[in-house]
Image (cartoon, rainbow, N blue to C red; front, side, top):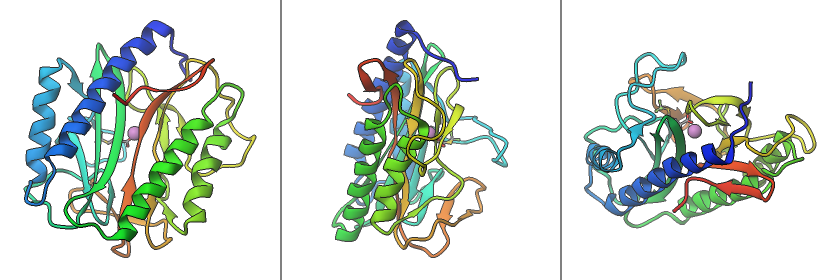
Length: 255
Ligand code: MF3
Ligand code: CO
């Protein structure tokens, strides 16, 4: 079932989204060559507590995972695509870091992700990130009443495929609300005019995951959570939680 949210509920979702945006900005500022992933996780946990919000990720135990998620951030470095578990690893010059973060306020969730390079960047990584961000914007622009989920997926997928990137297999966005993961699944590829019709009050996390090298495949890391590209090429992931409204898409997870 897809729950349509009221304006009052959207206001609380927006509060959760603001917390998510603030934490991601702080993490980005803190992430330098030499910073450890656990330092970033601790910073996020502290800011979360200050905001009186709760982690959407910590202790989360979906069917696909072998163990409850142990951190508040996902920190995916280089060939890690998503769900990277923070470790003592210290960021090195040129690392491509994707940070995914979710928080709830009064039980309503926000979920967003950013990707960036620390230190001196390989221009090909910057292209990858810029293209993934462009696909996110294009997908969001399609999230209007009367459009369909296929319009969102088509916008994202056409940009990723057009640039020659892989799209992470089996993964996409999702509904967001009183649970971080709700119906519907939001594929990163689709056919225009097909799929679920979008209605005001739907809240969706839209999240392109693009892989350099054109391959869609992944493998699991030994922690059971981290998803890596199969050939060691780098990947980027960006995400916003948005609401479909009569006035068009409303981004809930920006400042
Ligand atoms: N934003 C991520 C997603 O939608 C959530 C991370 S999984 C978790 O898949 F277990 F860390 F919560
Ligand atoms: Co998500």
